[in-house]
Length: 75
Image (cartoon, rainbow, N blue to C red; front, side, top):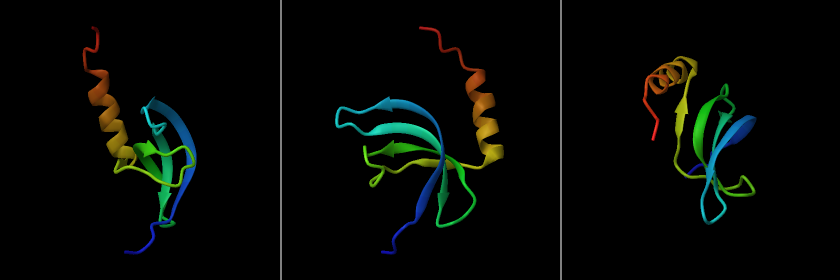
């Protein structure tokens, strides 16, 4: 299996942290030297290992924003 190259170009925010110290984050990530996209996944403390995640282009992240803004999240 070929190595996947990645570069976190901008850290946008932390969403949470697991008991093992991995952080779920939303970042801008360039995969295999392609333009960076919005990316949500967990990262180990050294940013060497990662979980499976979700990657969004600008239009997709706008749609996600619009969907989330309509949710009633009051407890």
